[in-house]
Image (cartoon, rainbow, N blue to C red; front, side, top):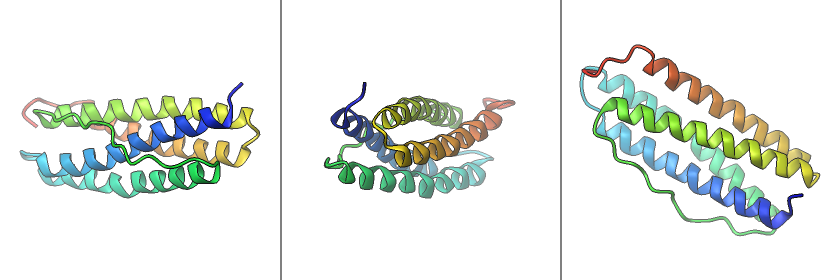
Amino acid sequence: MADVKELVEGMNEDLAAEYQAVVMYRTYAALVTGPWRQELRGFFEGEIPDELGHAAFLADKIVSLGGVPTTEVKPVPIPRTNREMLENALQAEVDTIERYTKRLQQAEELGEISIKVQLENLVVDESQHRDDIRRMLMDWKESQ
């Protein structure tokens, strides 16, 4: 059975990962090269508002549960290629979905149904991001 302290700690882990996503997408938007630079730059920049929204939700809920939001940012892997950027982003989305699934189960156990539902909505967002990146990688050639 989860307790509120455990939920807050987990949500702070999630918050650090959302901060990572913002920094990662901004950094990758600057680093992209090659013939698909503009498209990839636009993709990475387009993800930032969603990740900031997720971070705002988490920070507000952490406070409402009696916690203090983290200011930590998980480390951002620096890629060598555009493909590696997309692979890193894909792994981050997969990891986030896994964490949010655990977190929504904790929220449900605590009777925090509103948090559970909002986390389910975040899972939907992150799943869409994951699927977009998967499709981008489907026929990716190294020269891209």
